[in-house]
Structure formats: structure tokens, C-alpha cells
Image (cartoon, one colour):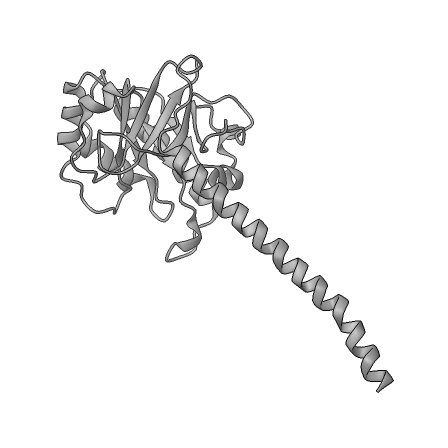
Amino acid sequence: MASTSRNTKSGKPKRSYFRRLLQLVAVIAFGTLIYAGWFWFEMRSWKPETALYPEQGAVIASGTPGVRFETLKAVGASFVYLELGAAGAPPDPGFRQRLEAALEAGLKVGIVQAFDPCRKADPHSAKFARMVARNEDLLPPALALARLPNACPSRVSDAAVASEVFTLVNQLELHSGTPVILKLEEEFESRFRLAASLDRDLWLVRDRSRPRYAQRPWLLWSANNQLQTEALAEPVEWVVVQR
């Protein structure tokens, strides 16, 4: 009986410890949920201050229907970048209509070419040349570097990916007549370190806080990828210029 009593008493502190641990985990989880909800609500309307970044604009994703570009201009955009899907992406029959509508609304317009590391440079540049006529009024094209080669059907080395990026940059510049802007997402830059090896203007991506992962100054910053506006039904990626 004495032994049973000792075992029972020794189990109480353990049960108390685990109870407190579970309570702490619950409090942390609840706090995280509250913060995530606040952050989501805040980011629906947050834009960097115009006093710091007078020139602001938006990215319109490939295939986005019903964009009211005049409204986008009214809420503070002076430019838009229209996304052109990577080589092999589904056709976007509304791309040229969006391009014309954005220009007619008085916005400066540029094109973002998405890069698929599983494909060579040639089909990307061929698609860009086919969809985007040479036009001196357009902003410099941007090359979006986000997708990693991990899921490619056959193995693609990092050296091969970097080589195709260099080739594609040259091809896009030959067609457009202007230097390409590198839209580098953090994971891609961390792996390939292109900011150091390609001397081009940078476009970095990070919600709310100024990005520093490229280790050198940037020109464009995607500061909020979920801004809600009256210009379109879906959240829009909001971009500012650093001069």
C-alpha cells in the first residue's frame, strides 16, 4: 500500500507539468491565430506610404479577367506590370486586351515573363516575342524567377538553370531594347545567387517589411500580394519603386 501511495504522489507533478504545457501550447496557438487574422485583415488595405514611395503600381496575373484599369489608377497606381505565363503555360487570350486597356487608362505598362526552370530559354523568348510587340513606350521587361527545378520531370542542374536564365535575359533584351529587371523571390535567390552574378535592376518580394535578401539595393518591391481594391475581384500584388 505504501508503494502505491508513493507512485500516485509522484505522478501528480508529472500530470500537472503536462497540463501546464498543454495550456501554454493552447495559448501560443490562439495567439498565433489572432495574429494571423489581424495580419490578413491589415494586409487587405495596407500600402507603403506615398511620402516614402511616390511611385506605386500593381502586377496583374496572367488570365485575370475584368480588370478596371481606370479604377486601379484612381486608387494610386501609376504603372502596371502584366504577367505573361511561362513557356508551356495555358494560353491567355485576354493578354493583348489587357495591355491595350492599361495603356488607354494612362498607366505605364511593363511585362513580367515568368520563368520555368524545366524549360530552355528559347521557348520563353519565343513566347515573349510573339505576344509583346516592340514598343518604346513600354517599361523594361521583368523576368520572374520564383519556381525551383525540384519538380522538373527530369533532373536539371543548378548550373543549367543559371545558364538558361543568362541566355533568356539576353534574348529578352535583344527583343525589347532595354535591360531586363530581375524579379527575384527569396528562395530562388538563396539558391542561385543571381543578384551578385547578373548586374541588373532588382525587384524583390516580401509582404510588409523591406526585403534585404539580395544584399544590394533594389528598384522594385512587391510589398503586399493581397491588396483588395475595387479594380478587380481578386487581391492584387502591390509594388513600389525605390529611387
